[in-house]
Length: 165
Image (cartoon, rainbow, N blue to C red; front, side):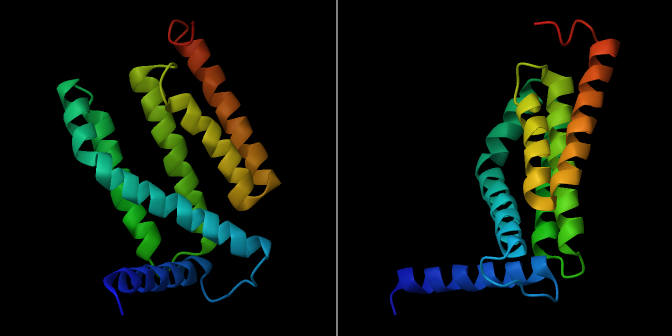
């Protein structure tokens, strides 16, 4: 067996193990909504972890040189939470998805408050609402839209100059 096949088989086994953890004791049928939601959640967390690992050192230097140490601390905490979400055996799918969504919202909010509205913060806050619908359904998506609207309204009233473009 070649090295390429060995790496591919190990990743496939890792992928299946993590999906089993994400789904808990139930194994959804292929093609079922739960099946796809768990795969999307895995892709979201695993991609975030991989890209976070690649970009972590340059981002830390950039934000620390800019005096934005809060973003560096939050990025590190989010990255460590990603490990917990991937490898924890005790979390249900709903809790795992909910924690992931809260992390995305808080990251967007912290970037929005620190850098301003012309940054990646509003994009992450928008992604929070879209992913809520994708991972948890229509009611959580509506709740996320309400949370985003209330947050932006509150920011607009308290920091008028921040949201003026």
